[in-house]
Length: 359
Image 1 (cartoon, rainbow, N blue to C red):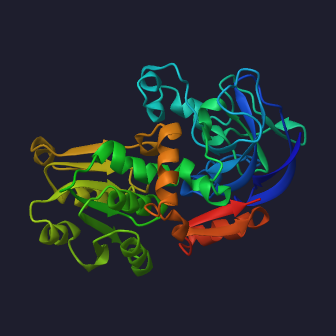
Image 2: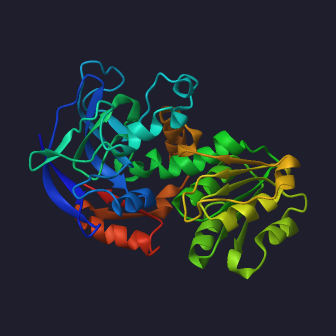
Image 3: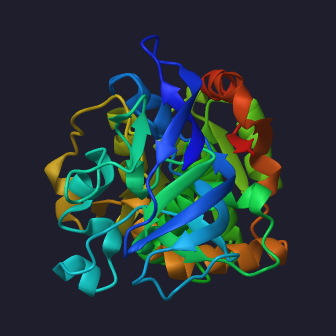
């Protein structure tokens, strides 16, 4: 079928181009997009992927067709799209699909598992199936394992980012840190992922939530959505200032920055059995932590996609949003699909927390 995609250009921006999309195979679903969030991962991959690559991995829309083997959804269903996974490895079989043994091959190779692409431009197959979807497009073909069925009441204009950014921040808290009623948490980086962590901690009843950033505006937003304390990291030793708030140290921390110095500060602020969940991919290739810091019981763990089963966590977060406990709509700025470059530029400049393209 004929569709329109936002393809990567030689200048590493995006250009709307006509494309052709294959019909869904037996285990695939055809989705007409209603919204798609712009994630920093999309913008990073655009800097080195080939011309005509189709990115986008925070899509939501309506099912238009399903393959012969699909029984979970039907045409007309509202769905969100997330990463894909093999479904048969040990991690997938134990409800940890984001740690699938074939995660990189299935989500970043630009093709289906058999090496084919459902997207063609000028008759030639192009890089697609990005994180299971490639939703910088009017339509997408996705493996059924990427598909999350939504309630009929879901506002699809706002659902797209739930499949990655919001799920990642929320899952890091719920699935990795697992806070209790007396826990103290800190979130380093108040972007979309970090603010989702703040909201989740507040929704879970965490009494002490510290947000750390360098943007006064982002810190103000963090307070509005649940942070009990905010710290500008430029104003002095962050770990020391956190211990002034929580003398015994934090039970948990979420790092969304990917910076070695920030991770080190987060770990230093933990108590001796605390956990730092690292979700950010940033400029630092290595992180150095003094060995006794870990020997004394602290844990540093990496987190992919919130350690979530999307079909479980996304509906839970949408229910929280409907109840006013997960107000991520406050973070969104909507742009028409054809204005993708404007939205991407605003994201890079930090003018919006979460840009969402609508169709």
